[in-house]
Image 1 (tube, rainbow, N blue to C red):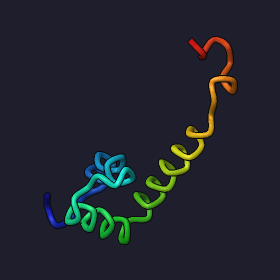
Image 2: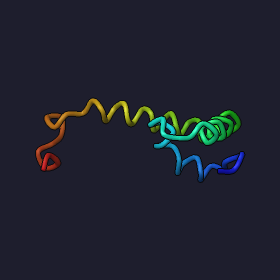
Image 3: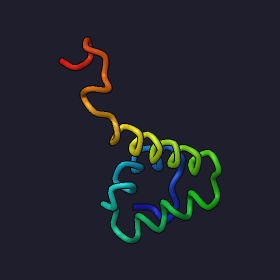
Image 4: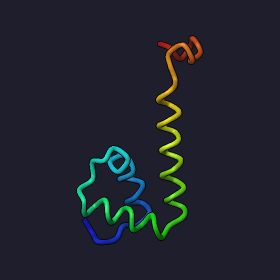
Length: 68
């Protein structure tokens, strides 16, 4: 991977980053980009919040039409 990432690459890699699946070099490039890009930092935090929220949803929380 390149030494630096653009915003599109960050969006493509966010899941792997949050899962801890990026190689060390790729993780460092990802984090360097976050250090310089407020937009991507906000995006990653929104994805973290979404994952945390969805992880608390149970089948009983869903309306009947979505349960199937």
